[in-house]
Length: 296
Image 1 (spheres, one colour):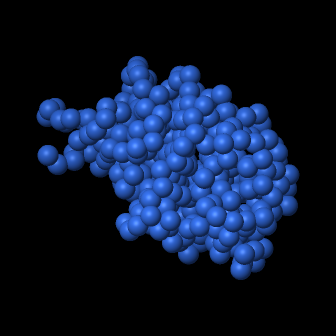
Image 2 (cartoon, one colour; image 1 turned 180 degrees about the vertical axis):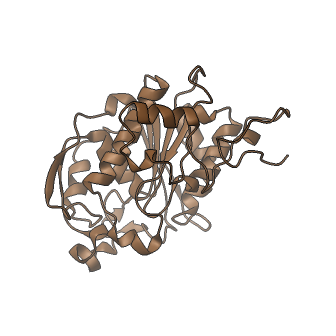
């Protein structure tokens, strides 16, 4: 059966279809009209993810729709977008998740040529944190689940931890606020450079992404700070990573993707589980961690 919705704002068909057939995320996907309206009425319209000109996914069909499952929030990596979660969203849909129970936003430019300019900036952190807060408030859920990939892992970890920081490029101090730990049930970090990129040793402060203050340098103060407290990302914490990851790989001190204090991990070692493959081909593992709190 063909997928019948390219954008969530399409008119529903009267044909009988499964929930998986009703879900598709692409570069043209947007939040539902109800979620867009709610974001602008509740102070989130200033954020880039809410402006309607970047890929996004999630939202109720109407304000009266009931959300029964714990909402899942997907945070992509550097130069990716919400559309990068296509496989995960469609897999979750087959398990019964509705668009009102799955949310993906886009942060930063969707341009690999600009990836070196992205780092754990105050702006990127505020975007991710605001999105997590918005989904929780909008759905009325007691807790949400968060799945991050690549730089989305370290951004989401700090967004949840909250607290102060220093933006290396604007030279400004900031304070994100109190931790959101109690608002997160399960956190899954996929191919995150939690302990830095080995390649960053060669570029360091020459490139914003690898700088030693709030970049992905192994001795980055930012990484040191988010790793200082174990298991503060949620009630259940897992990582998924691969020895075949050509970008993150294995750092000078060993694996860089495990999260301090994590409850478990799924490790791959061969093609096609490279940096993007370990996200695109592990949707069932992501689902098991979120739904069952199990590593499969």
